[in-house]
Amino acid sequence: MYSIAQLKPGVAIMVDGDPYLVTKSQFSKQARQGGTMKTVLRNLKTGANIQKTFSGNEKCEAADLERARCQYLYDDGSKGIFMHKDTYEQYEIDLELLGRQKGYLLEGGDADVLLFEGNAIGLSLPPKVELKVIETPPGVKGDTAQGGSKPAKLETGVMINVPLFINEGDLIRVNTEEGTYVERV
Image (cartoon, rainbow, N blue to C red):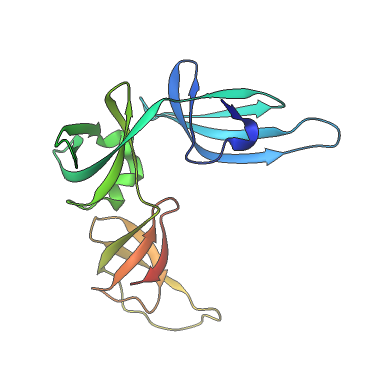
């Protein structure tokens, strides 16, 4: 059981019999009232997002999720195919459920597949991944006082903003949780 203070992004809980992953949380407390935790939860079966507020001494049941270390093999257009690194068992996850996480998956790369009652229902990526920049305009330093940024297309097809000194062919580290540039590798 989780208290409301433990509901941080990445925590999996049960709500009305379905597993949900906390994607955002904000704690607030006013004067003599008990604290409240406003959360955004993603249903791990359907991918739908809901907002829920927990208050006071409310407890949440932890979702019984297993994590299987897998290798991303390929996508067949509608599903991503993952293979367990130890048992070689394959799991399929709908690309719609992966959402923007798909943009940080490289074929042959590692990820943790979330299993609920033996079924693959989601994915847990490493916090940072290294991807190659395949397309970006040349960096022209102009009227910027602090630096600046420009759009860049990465090898997985995802677009992010990068500093002006990044060029095509550079290998960069990207934060998978926020989808932001971290550093050049």
